[in-house]
Length: 415
Image (cartoon, rainbow, N blue to C red; front, side):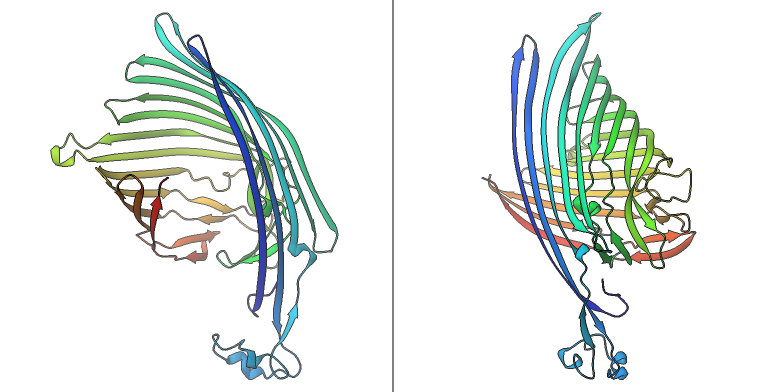
């Protein structure tokens, strides 16, 4: 990998092949429905990179080092009295990976009454048999073989109690999994210019098992309107996190926290603004606020973490989402606002504090116009406010990204 301070060239090729087949069936049984089905997903990836570094020699004219960056590495400066190009590709700069997921499920959707009260039970289970294989080399040219094979039984239960024709109480439990991505498993190292750090994968990662508990009260005052309040709890086993590796330069990798948990509450609403007046009948407002507490148990973690008690990486203590929508005939306008609380961007080590991402405000605008039944023209402006993305470590700013507003224009054809 070239040193970004000295310059280099990086070339990479990636070939992904993804295939999926799924089927779903529904069988009515009395006043209930039995649903079952299956899925097969197969993914193949082949990745290879070559890296070249510019080096000085005893014959290099060192006055070249003071050249303008736009002309520093022009062809005339490569050669006898210029720079030497040295290939520094490692065997770890390539990997082949494969994932095979086979899943099947069975569920029942059954309304029933108890004491004159209406209830609805949706319950079932999903079996997922997953295999992830990856072949590569580490920096010492030793063969790396990853073989993650796991069969998971994932139950799900959702019970709805009807308080009134417009109000429900829902209680739910489910179990899900989160599997590492190929890039998180591969020992391949690369320089990430957006975070000014070296990133490499961890072949010893384990998949994450998540247990979800939710209790939700919701009411629907009018058509298209909704008010809800919910509490939730999530338990993570082997949560995958992005961590700082203690080295002489900022280096990031991935590790498993033994156990973690999230809990909190959420308030959500969707309201038509027609009550203000007829001129506002095509406008609606949406809002969502989440308060989240998280804690990680580091016993058994796969990395040397500095703190015994901390938040889960990437988890904000609060999130705010607001939206204003206009919809009439073939025209729609969406204005969306988002803000999140300070969160851990990269988990620290015994020698480095956590790197935190500071809160910022995001504002997006989407304009869509349909032409007939088949064409849609959409204009999107993302991050209109253009606030800097700031990261701090031990109360000191370590980096910032100012990406600005991005615009996109697209035309969709519906068949």
